[in-house]
Amino acid sequence: MSDVRTRFAPSPTGYMHIGGMRTALFNWLWARHTGGKFILRIDDTDRQRNVDEALRPILAAFRWLGLNWDEGAEIGGPYEPYFQSQRTEIYKQAAERLLAERKVYRDFEKSEDVQREREAAERERRPYVSSRRSLELSDTEVRQFAAEGRPHVLRFLVPRGQMLALDDVVRGHVEWDTSLIPDPVIMRPDRTPLYNFATVIDDAGMRISHVIRAEEHLSNTPIQLLLHQALGNTLPIFAHIPFVTAPGTTKKLSKRDLKKYRENPKFKKMFDAADQIFPQIGLGSSETLNPVMVEYYEKIGFLPEAVLNALARLGWSLDDRTEIMSLPTVVENFTLERIVKNPAGLDPDKLYSFQTQWMSEVPLEKKVERCLPYLTKAALVPDPPDAGMHDYLRRVILALGERLKVFSDILDARDFFVADDQLDYDEAAFKKRLCVDGAAERLRRFRGLLVKTEPFEPTTLEQTLRAWVETEGIKIGDVIHAIRVAVTGKSTGPGLFDCLALLGRMRCLARIDRALART
Image 1 (cartoon, rainbow, N blue to C red):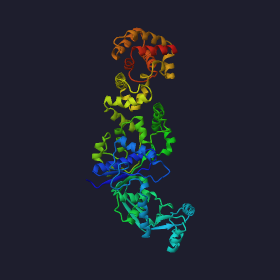
Image 2 (cartoon, rainbow, N blue to C red; image 1 turned 135 degrees about the vertical axis):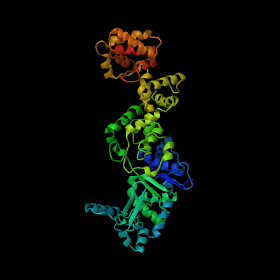
Image 3 (cartoon, helix red, strand yellow; image 1 turned 60 degrees about the horizontal axis):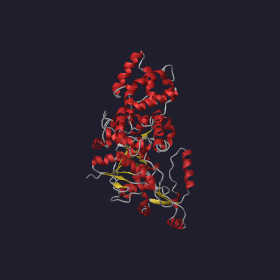
Image 4 (cartoon, rainbow, N blue to C red; image 1 turned 120 degrees about the horizontal axis):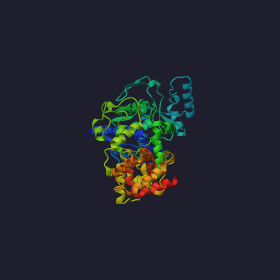
């Protein structure tokens, strides 16, 4: 068994960020490739949040994608607790040890004074470094102030005048001048830890061998390296991977920029899909679930295999040509050295391309199984559906073919499931195809043929129509579009003759009669 131990440590935000899931995936892949362990640790120091409820979507996202964890939330392990909120005493003990060793000091400066110093440094365009005035206090004064209950933080004493170096697996050789690093706060006045301190304590305590995280954390690394050194820890191997960017930008994908994403041509169709589908199945709209969230892809009907394939290709490649890869294939070939430095753009078109490929391999029965919940939630079929509905749905799915890109696309075929007198019409298409000279009369005459066409199957229906238009001396386009709008309400869809056969003679006649009554 490998000694590789990777971790992902999300805060319970109430949703799982798609970029965060890519980071988690890379950690999971390295652990699985090496035969190591993947730990799911929870950074839940925000006590104002309902952790259980906020954590649920995160754990659900891991389970939907099939990314199991070896230690951590809900399953425990040899280094528990795996929730930061339950590790307070561990942080306090470490802080007291560093305080006794004079590697940490009590800082009694007021926060507003520190802020003024920072602002002054910015105005003067010089690096801000801590004033360290509290270090001028005698031990007696420090004890007296502490006994009086004066508010103070604990700051780590950065050793100045050193060059700190790191050989990052992805970023390469990186150096920092410690003289330019301000003393970081490691414990607040209420003695709760700050991120850098808690992370270092947890990574060391849980024997994390590789810290694989997004490149924006590179700025945290020098402090963490210094803290590891001060505590006498063995340094983990660092790999700072490119962050996931929004389509067509170099900016990190963020929930804060949803308004901009709605206007992005590539992203817009994903928001539009949410606004069309989610209200029908009781999930609100794109205001509830959006493409920044992993849950969006699950609820809209993506396959886990497609999402994993897409995420694995965000910043990593097997070679210069392979795109479609199963998770076992990625695990077998994954290496940190093949992670690129450049930002990795989330491309909706690419996502749909992966989805289309993986959907083509899904058996018909599984498509039926995955489509049915959308139809039942939208009250388009009975719950539970009978055997006849299963057979009908199979035929609809076969007719849709590649039009069924995600499972919720079945709702675009609602015209096959609604009652004939409830069919909605695309009014622009209706006016264009049925409200022009001669269109209604041609449709009425063709209706007469449908009454006696036998058998009522695609091949026979096509032969009947083609023979009729030849006899009438008209073009097939003069009638075929009117027929489609009359029976489906839309100008596009599966092959017309498949549509007619699926609906059956009586439903087609009823719909044509209703359309004619509107002309």
